[in-house]
Length: 274
Image (cartoon, rainbow, N blue to C red; front, side, top):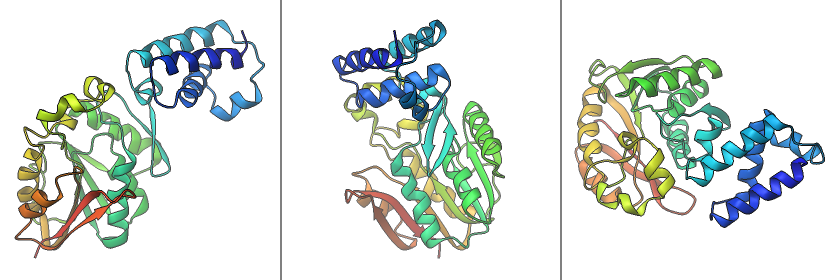
């Protein structure tokens, strides 16, 4: 069997299982099985599929058909133009989170000391460390997540200090110009509404934010107040329907605003400590 035929077979299986982007997924899994990028496939469609390639490709297809996200199969996800390692110990970085990075670069590029609370894969912390001249500290309650984040920092040449703690509890008060975070904000009551592959495979601690999805914000906002110097900024990713409630939590802050994604949905909350 040649690569073209194997890709068509995989595509049909994925289509029948109603997997999104079946052709792209088949190509990504095949490239992973062969150990090449997708552009190599286009030039070698007629090449015979070696036995080892077929074994890996079949296993990856089986995992995807069972619901495992493609990113956990390949171990990779792009974020802000860079490739990050991801494992089931961390949330898969989303394009929506890039709006947090953009909000920082647009409004707080001069920050010298930054804390990323709940860093996960390290996507925000590593990106900001590479895009800005700032000292970057990143925390997470999960030591396994911090290992992934540290691997990403080393691989991408970023200098980030990683600290295992709950929120910013191990960080010094009034030491930061900026606190950034993408906290878990999916309401537990709505867990049945999210995609099965997200609910069943991504870490619950990074997804669910209590009954209404706001538990972490209720703790994060006062913690950020403690960490920030006067005039420092807090920038957080927020759930699509939570902007009014989160802005109400920021009533003692200044310059409170939300920033929308390309669909007009509020995705980022920005506030400044007086």
